[in-house]
Length: 313
Image (cartoon, rainbow, N blue to C red; front, side, top):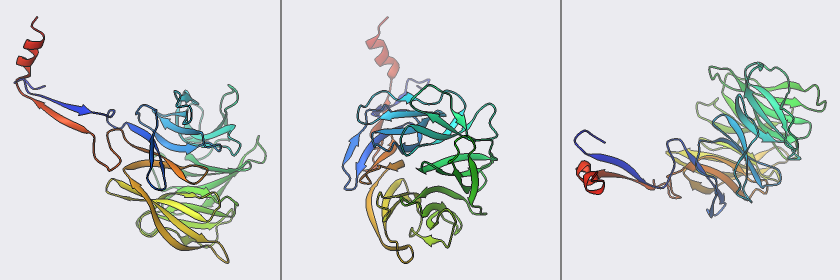
């Protein structure tokens, strides 16, 4: 509201700046709007049963049941938390956390079946973000420092729950991110900026053999299909994210045989459903399916006169 009585305001749907809404999108673009109210959120991930989504909002981890549409339930209550991933049985959740007593961002595991406090996997150097919990005994993630240095990739052996052992998987001057392990546990897919742009690669796992390029051009946020024969990734381009499918031939060596566009939208975060046929996506709370902003700027002149007429006293 200006001194001369000119009023400018925003009309339409949507939340405040930085607030996102959740939708479920399938491979042909059908969209189901979630009942979750818009809010800042990051790090989307599905539970193994495909009913619950974990995310981080305002530094805390929450669970949202997409079937019931209930109010999100908090998993954490203190610290600055990031990168939640479910255990294969869905009974635990691992996440990185900056909190009192942690050595930078350490990795913690929280039992979801009781009220016990999160358990640290041990003091780790740098800030550590879990990205996938592919089997009971294996957890993978990345580490960086407080200044946002290029990320390196690690895997943790959880076979002894009281003494997790963490090993380097890939250490590079390039920025490495988003590692996920194939369903059969023999390959890892990840992002790397080694070429000057972000691209998706695969290598053998747990020992990293020769790499194979998966994406064609920029590629981020890779995920394996349930059968391990397709790698989905995102090709971002000026506010629109296109989900790509890289069809793989596994033998005698992993090879990309085709790349296909699946679906596009104004997505700023997503996670592949365990069934491999749909995604939970986050997008701006005032952005429509076609990328149009569903708000309007309204200019009112002589607002003081309007106000006097409507509120004479």
